[in-house]
Length: 453
Image (cartoon, rainbow, N blue to C red; front, side, top):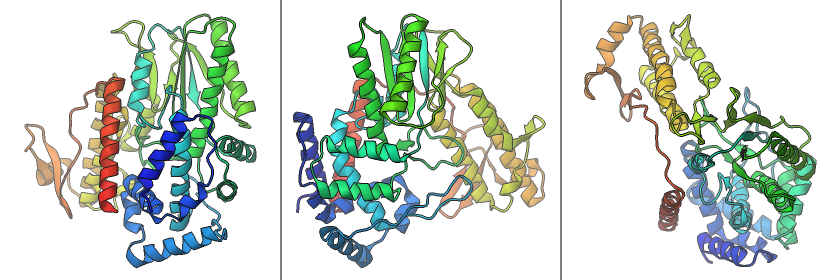
């Protein structure tokens, strides 16, 4: 049997060359064990913890053989999913369901993704937020901003809409029936993210069905511009579920565009309830959120927009680590060992910087956060060991990286230090360099996957 990467590449090429071609006999690809090997590789890349729990050896082979037999006889059934909520996590889905979901997603994404609009980011070929922020920087001279967060919750009408969208390119009854069962079992969440302290911009992902649904919104906007009686000067950019539209012109034009977006969400995408999109003038104090950032005029380059760290978000993140304007211990973490505490705090600080590294004010706002965050770490260790902060620094402090003292403790895997790197702003790469970077990573992933097979 052919490798999964080869089949997916051929499907993608066919879809790109013939936009109206209807694909048949895709279901038989699910009899190929290599698709599940590839799906397992993708799961291991996204979660180290789950990679440890993945089936191995004879257990894996037996699971795949049983699943393929059930798919051949069309007797495979998905277990109802329970994703839980923010306070109580649900049970993990079966590995069989997860691998089959991954294989099906590979098949349909290879066919649909080549036609996703280049104003949409977060999917092939530029999955990171950097490309979207770079495009916003290029939206020079806009007068009005329309933006907000698109809803991410399924309803029965949208599941029916998704099947309609799939039928436009798929002519395979068995595969469509399998997807219908998958939707009925709630196998697909709209959003896939698990971050403890802040949204890591480059790790937030929408499931492919949700991307396909929002692709319908992108097409709706294209039709609106093409059907307009007069030219509309706008910059439409979407990254995952975050939307930005910059409009050059009058407020009436911007309002009409926002109303059209609301109409698309309600009637074409069939969302039953959603928060209205914001409409603000560029010079207003109110700012538009885009992902974890907020957008504001760039005082150094008039006419351009720059991403900032939201003040409210940082204040909320600092709340557990300060009290009465001073760093405070974290009582909920006193049960952790010192290496676990240092590792946890260091990971939080690193993740926060990775999230906001493109913000113009990252040094000022994250520097303030780090003052309280690091102070909280010192006071939590001091409270745990019943010593003073000065004694904590004397016991665990290190000056190897310079004159500034940082914590360094010996863990099971080596020395662990608090995140003390410079909080400098990262510059954007242009679109061509982003594409080259993506291609290099893609080739490396395919090569490592081939060797691992």
